[in-house]
Image (tube, rainbow, N blue to C red; front, side, top):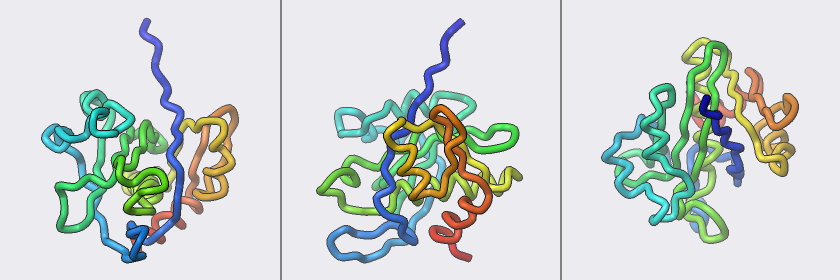
Length: 175
């Protein structure tokens, strides 16, 4: 039997914004989150600085891969998230900011927070009361507690429950 590979997430919440913000100017840009297509993935490669094999992720039939873009600029992917709808929650398999949104020279902050807030929103839409789970790298457990309001469920399991999910959704997707 093939052993299931667990991805221990190591995305960093750089800043919780109300969309994404330009690091230099502080300007805020409204975003769209939509399902990605295989055409979109032509430039999303390790050669171009992406850490994960998103083509492989897209081929998995139980996962949906979403792209974060700035409204009216669908061709530039700011970040990606891979989600699976479980019976009682949404599971985050992968979260990644675009290479130009990582490190000291990043262009935009708020990308990972935006993607996680979307996962919470989807969890509400699917009737799961905003519940989201993921496996964290050990050194980031406290970071996710502090920034996302996630709960450490034991081992490396992290859960974002209803109240924390609502805070993230209200930040990124105000009515």
